[in-house]
Length: 534
Image (cartoon, rainbow, N blue to C red; front, side, top):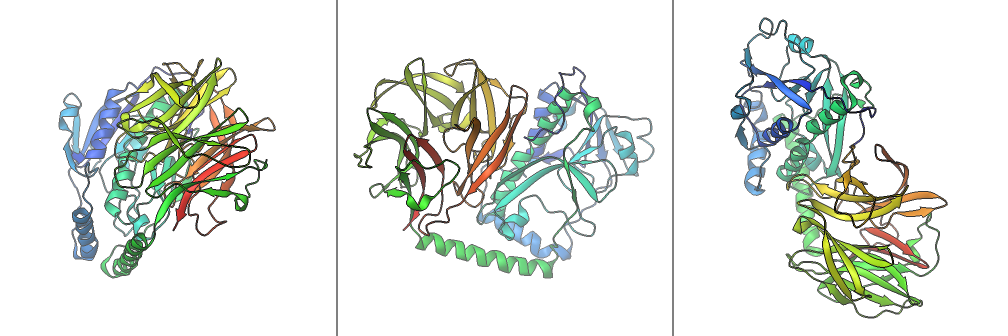
């Protein structure tokens, strides 16, 4: 998550919070958010303001087509854990005073709070703004004269590559509103239901994260925000206007279905044995390593030994439900290679076999997110024998763990999901330890250090060039593993993290290659992987 405040020493003072609701029946994502706030010590919910003048805005004939479409989506694309299902939050607030207001003028006089969280109130009375020292957190921002639609709705309709989820800070009635927390995910191909669900389960994490940052920074720094300001925008969902949007949606839906049936795709490797410069990427020179029918190869890492290259990779059957295994391919300096040999197989999915050397031993950290672990393996007989050591972390949904040694510390980068409904593509977390084989990793205070599907997830070894540090990352905006970004790490400390993207790579050199997913280079060999369209 981007830092919205300057880092300061911990402040023991709790933030005083008021909550705006229309009813104690809240959405499931809101209930989850409230539980997180109450569990931590950063804030204290001291007042509930209950709206007694709820205005229903979406039951008029003006929005019949929109309401029908939501029902159609709910029926066609069922959710395992619906962010918009109902949950009763009254039991969470048994000792917290509740004020029920009508006109919002008399009962709030003399009340004061640091921040307000808005989970209701289509219209916020002026007296509520006046009682908050620093403003009102809200996930919704309505445009005058239109019905507010959930985040993620229009992105599917208009087929935008990413869906943005935002947290706003309202300080008064104004057209420009600061965004204090923002993330973007890959937009679902056809399901508005799934897209909105992903957006709001992610949104459930925003306010707890920001409250933690505010608590650590100190209340006096709440105004030192680097958040951007955005103007209100909206799209009409009145029947006539929405009708033309639906035509576009169903056209894209049909096109997507036909394309999936007519197109066969498979993950392959591509390699180059020329000593290319890491700042240029001429992939037209790369040769294809195509797996046998019914198998795909992905996530290649390289070890150079005994004048040969050893390509460690994920091998997986193409049938739905197949689990990845870790295999190795031996390649000579001319590019001749032997068939892969399986070296690691579990009853859960394995991929991304990141490797590192430590005290003259070779270790591997394969991706084991399906097992909720980060596992460490030691090579006992190169390259085929690997022995499990222990878990570096447990009870974590972590993906593509990548280690890097810098300033006498080992840094662990990994994408993570804080709940099962989130995507594993979106958020990058950072940890550090004195040893790469440690069982104790300290989380970075800015976690997640990146919340952006276009550049978060690791895509290979972090490398150095001319004294600078570069981190390859995945861009999954259009589809999983669509492209690569090369990011220069400009600040990596226990309190700060900053990187800038210096190269954005898309699969545009060969019409048969539709993605470029990871990048690794050792000696004269450079390896990438991607999808081959057949």
